[in-house]
Length: 291
Image 1 (cartoon, helix red, strand yellow):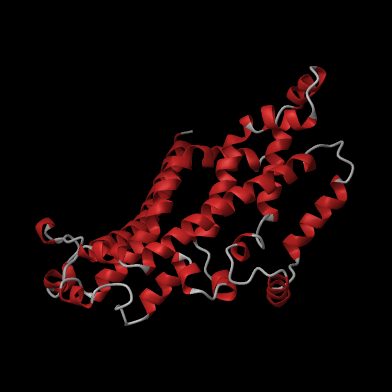
Image 2 (cartoon, helix red, strand yellow):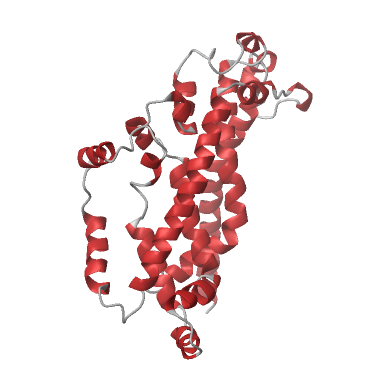
């Protein structure tokens, strides 16, 4: 018994060490980017700012210049709009499709599930999708970034499994009291589904926020480009005149301006995730119990 307990402790210690190493592998680069974004030229020129630069030497000039420009805040607003509206549409359609598929007495359930599972194995492909978006007149519109991925088959199956785990007695009791199927869905199922809604909503929101390739394909106007496209241009281009005043280059080096842009792109997800973490963990566990 003592050997078993010792082995368990060693295993727990090994897991803690591995997780700590993974955490450091994430935290150290992130901290380095934060420090770099606050490091002025005079500090950067000496040992590239160091890992813990003096607090009195740090500067917010990079953030002020980037947020004071026209293009980056506009791209930020586009990404916020696409993320909020797109996630809302994703949740509405996914929820209203997953609920009837979770009902055993829903007659078209089997063929619809087969169709959903088919999309997990095969997709239409890039060129047919592009032609479809073009023929629907969605080119250079925000709809082109939201409608093609309106429903994720995987998220749909997770939400369906969550609905199947809800007690069927609640629906039966509501129907005995005269509630319609819509009332059962709206008044009983949805209030009990906050964990899975937060989980799937976070999945969709991260996808929209990181939207990059679709914007390259479908968006041609610079004023409609999301943040990720502008961030790519800022990180890959040596010309910063479109984003910041050229005089700032004498205060903040180009590396600090690029690091500040990366932090600006990360902040929304860093704010949203802790707010949804409690529901996120519960939703993933409950949604994966029954498939």
